[in-house]
Image (cartoon, rainbow, N blue to C red):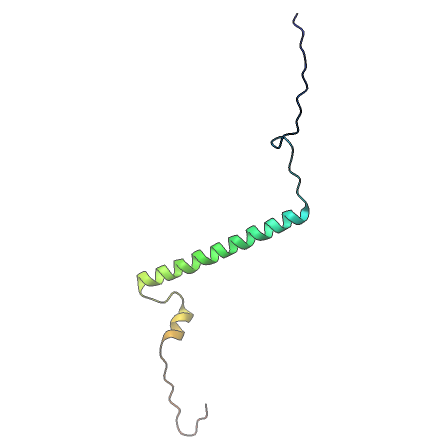
Length: 81
């Protein structure tokens, strides 16, 4: 039978040590990632609407189309605006 020798290997390198982060750091990172995701979605939706309105030659939203059209209101005698 062969004798087995156990040689202790130190496990203090960064790959095996778990990284412990505090709840405050974790919360801050989650808020930052959420804000970045929200801004990214907003920018893509805005640019997509602009691109789509440029292709179809229509305003991107109905409210924008309503405000971009010229309107003339004529008041008759006796009416006050």
